[in-house]
Image (tube, rainbow, N blue to C red; front, side, top):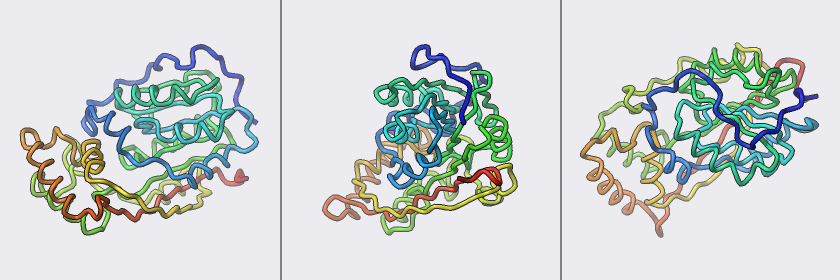
Length: 292
């Protein structure tokens, strides 16, 4: 049960002709920091995603808001029969970083990049349907209703949609993250910045409700608690990759901010380590009657 056979040209195809990407106002040129400092997908979540592809001989993955390709980078080693990966992002530099990161893992798998908003995606190969649609830490930036309608058009009948992520350091409630958030606010104002778009607004309804109102209304929640150990250096690198504290937001005050942030983090670190207790949540959704 899968797609029509895929052509096998070069392992990385030319970008498909989607709409013009955005002005990259959210993350700017942060692809390097994003790839190096953003936490990956936990092993338990990777196994859960891989299990959705059990029995599919040559799976196709559609990764929305792919960033630097963390999801396919985690899945390819455990699903070596993956036939094709579609990477979708508004940021061209993120897509370039993602294809470079994936290159050593591809084997016979092919990749297509699509620069544009997720809800406008259309597969380049006629009849190619995704067996798994993933969106990690990016669903809140999207037109979620339109994205799920698009997924219904392009996903195979048996496909699963996985909306997943965890809280950012902005929302984490440890002593050191609270102090760091307060420092950012002294520079950038009380509201959480959303790149140069202004301030971030919480979604009007939950992701569970978004999914329940879509074709993928059979939803299960899977939670993976984990402990992350940060260093002051890795926190600074992470901040450079975020929409709420990337360097351009500070203009000529960024160097001063980083120096002050480094002093704050050094003061809170214990043996050079800052602890984050996190929960990575996966909402796994299918069309009713298709759950395996």
